[in-house]
Length: 280
Image 1 (spheres, rainbow, N blue to C red):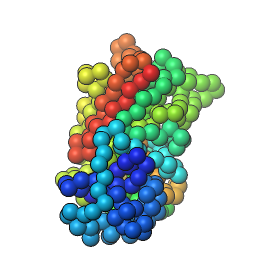
Image 2 (tube, rainbow, N blue to C red):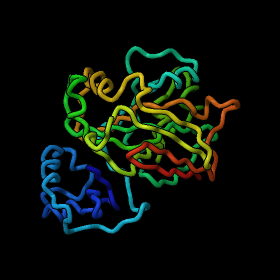
Image 3 (spheres, one colour):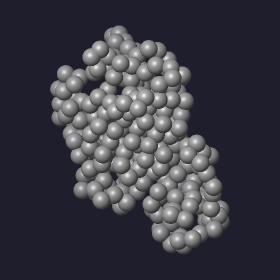
C-alpha cells in the first residue's frame, strides 16, 4: 500500500489513481494525513477492502505532494549507521545507535525550496521509517509489525554550528532549521517490498551522483533500530526515524563541498521514489 499527502489531504495511491481517504470512507478517517497513524491498524483493514476502482479519486501532480507524516510527535535521527560513512568521517563504529533528534518543525515535503542558513549546509540521503503501532521495549523480531511504512528523506545538516559549537556540539539544532527534513514522496508499507532491509539508496547533486549504496549496509537495520530506541523511549504512532546516511556526504569531500544557492538534490530509494530539494 502507498499513501500520500496531496495538498494536505490523506490519499491512497492505487493503480487506478489517488483516492481521497476522507471522502471514500465517508469521514470515518480524517483528511489530515498525520491523524491516520493513531488508527493505523483500523485504517489498514479498511484499505484492504477498498475496491480496485473506487470513487472519490484525486487528480494531482508531483508538486502537489507534501510530507506523508507532516507533524510527528517525535523525529529521531541516527548517526554513523553505515560502515563506509563512519570510515569517511574517521569516527568509531558505534556499539549502540548514535541517536539525536530533528525537531518536527524541520519537516517538509518531497519538492521543497530550502533556504541555506550558511555556507556549510550538507546533504545526507536516508531511508525514513514512520511508526504505525507505537510501543515501549519492542522486540527486534516484532519490529516490522510496528512500521506503517518507509519513505525517502534528507537529513540536511549545518556542519559548522553542529560540530564546532562550544562547549559541546549542537547536533539536533544544526539539523533542524526550516526545511532541513524533507520526506516523501510516498509512504510505502513494508509488505510492498521484496526485502525491506535491502533497498538501493542514492543522491545526486546537480545531476552528479554523490551517494550510492544499499540499505543492507546499515550497521543497525530497521528492526534493530526500533528495538534499541524503544528499549529507552516510547515510540508513538506517526513518529519518524531517519535511519542514517551512507558515505558520500559533502563534509568528507576533498576539499569539502557544501550546498550553494541554485543547487538541486535528487534523493532516491528504489520502490519508493525521489525527493527533489532545491536551495536558495
